[in-house]
Length: 387
Image (tube, rainbow, N blue to C red):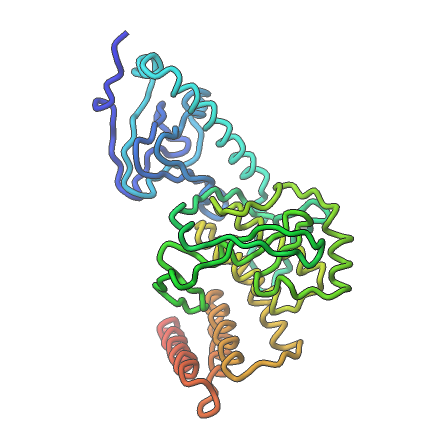
């Protein structure tokens, strides 16, 4: 049989260019030579990315072999080169690469099956974003580790980040077993940006990936700077409610390879903080980092939900709890809550908190300037909106 001519069927795609599109899919599949593509599913609120595929992986093979003509939208996430495989060349392609094609197709078909099942059962159409909505929290004790709408997030974390961490052995304050964790080499990090919600963006590394420590023996999880702050009563509660849990996602991974592993750590931490009766500020901090992760994974609905949850917890802490903090901390909290209201297009409440963040002579000069500038920004937004 004639050999498969790679050059004849190779095609290049620019970033954001569509390779395959839902019910209008061509009767073909692609083998990615280099680059990266995302598979999107359409729902009532728009499109959500289900998974990402890279070099050496197939895309579109399920629709091709089942002849359904249905599937997700496949878009190049960066400049991509791929081989187009259709009815006219599939036989020559398989005959020239029998071992590789069979191995890859079985592997990828299983990955896509899992991803599609996760999407179809995720209930994303049930997510309704409303002001002050009550979101049923994940309840790991009842087998609900993730909230409705949470998908699979296999987005990979670049292995280059390993140069910014080092391992250390610690003792769990709950079960008293020793285990290894990774700490950040802060001296090696290069700060690129300090965002308006105070998220620090570093070159090649995100501190949120390793912010949570998880004991592999008892599943106790918490921020590394709060990990050992466990009272006797909290320790007893955690032992009763966490040690016997066989949660659905398996053990936490020490080295982070994808965002699914990071999400698992944060939701374990959320479960532990719920058991411990942690403050609204601590709960808000977890939800804020979850919002950042959803934003990184381009899941807008879950980002909005998590951001709203974070804002509600921070507001509850502001209005309903007493906490000793200095003026600079108080200003920073006001600016953060103001930014959260701004994300929700609630200009009036955003203005109120930015105004409270201005302490003039008694406040931190830098935070005074930030709060004042953001108040002016909101006033301009209001003027533009009402023109």
